[in-house]
Length: 216
Ligand code: AP5
Ligand code: MG
Image (cartoon, rainbow, N blue to C red; front, top):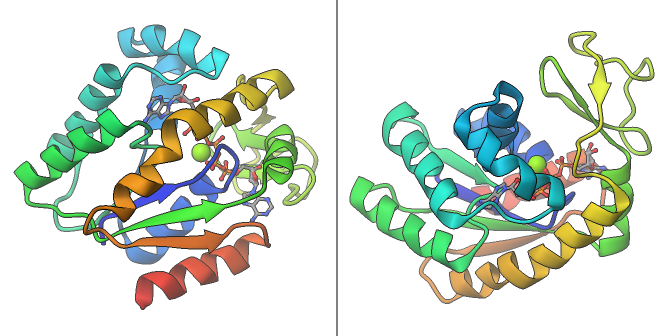
């Protein structure tokens, strides 16, 4: 299946995306993860993106579109589906994606919107910890590791994301409402089915609800 996961910062796109990709064998493309990797490696893309990311602003569309085009056109096994997490995030990105997928002959099957109230999002982001070594995601309030500060899977050190400070989180939520939430209406007006899932419940229940809507 070719899917888009939509939802505000902290809605669980990364968490659910990893579960869906493991279940379906689809390739998960997270623009946020690709950008953070570029920042870590200090590439020209990372140097360009860092200031926007730290401020909770969106990276310019042209930069993101070059990145996604490269992954979708060259790097991906065409026999598996793909799952887009954190992209598209603006109407121009969605329009460019439509053109790209039409050129590639790879239509979208569904858009899954994960709905979570703002106050829960703020708490989730303030408690998020990510393994610096393997990328596994934890939450000190909701999904803590067995040993504080260490990854259950690989023992790596858990770190906080630079953009998870209270002020930047508030700004990211505003940016989401202004620039990304309009994509829901955009896709509702298209042929691609849009499925809303209540994301304010335990991870396994959200995963089961997503599996149900995708199977139906
Ligand atoms: P990105 O990395 O995409 O960040 P985001 O959209 O702000 O979303 P998050 O990754 O913060 O949240 P998530 O929904 O993945 O939640 P998660 O599963 O981690 O983008 C970062 C930046 O990069 C942007 O601000 C922008 O600058 C740039 N960027 C990226 N893509 C771009 C684009 N297309 N265009 C322009 N700029 C772009 O979960 C959050 C926490 O909650 C975790 O701790 C998790 O353990 C916990 N949790 C998850 N599910 C549950 C649950 N059901 N119950 C309890 N806790 C849960
Ligand atoms: Mg994420």
